Image (cartoon, rainbow, N blue to C red; front, side):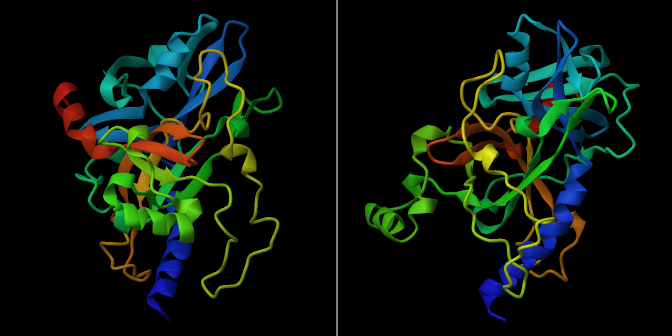
Length: 303
């Protein structure tokens, strides 16, 4: 088997395991309007810094809710904000760290990811595969049949999109000619510390490790509605993959196990970022590296 096929097998096999693992550490930011109706507004990572349990999301998710005069409360799932004692706001990097009360308990199937199992730099991002796990608004709905608010999680596996400044003019021309659908991203679209994740509708057919195209309808879903701008909810920005803001980004951990499926375990996975933006024109999600705020949270939160 060639090196390329080994990597494809790794991505396929680990890509089946990791979403199930990550799902238990992700939840929703929900707002309650004055008429009592619910709105899904974002995603959050359950994360433990030292002994302190927190919820990490994009700060703009919170500020957009607060700027909406028709919202009476917001919280994790359907719980009100009374369950929180503080929100650490890191404005310059669009990160919010929500601190719950000591007696706050998540649902039985949820747990808090240890901040110790995260990347302390971004050096391995170009050499690994990434997983975004969140709750898009288009998959959420309020129902009277089931108790409260129902939302379906979405997993997106992709690789980092490099910056234009990382290549010479000659190399950029090669990109345009040979892989125009995967062009480097203009530096002006991101802050120096941020990174871009490829987020395009046409990612190619899903295949087994043997190269067979999967056609089973129970496996495939039409997620095309996620990849285009749509109408914003009151208080939201007029652009974005709504609901995915605040979604955690995991790195598979391929580098640590040399892309070997048999060598990989759940302990190789690393939290590496939080989704804080979306650019429709370039089909990218923009993320803030976890290492940009982890140590600061420990210091300012006095955890």
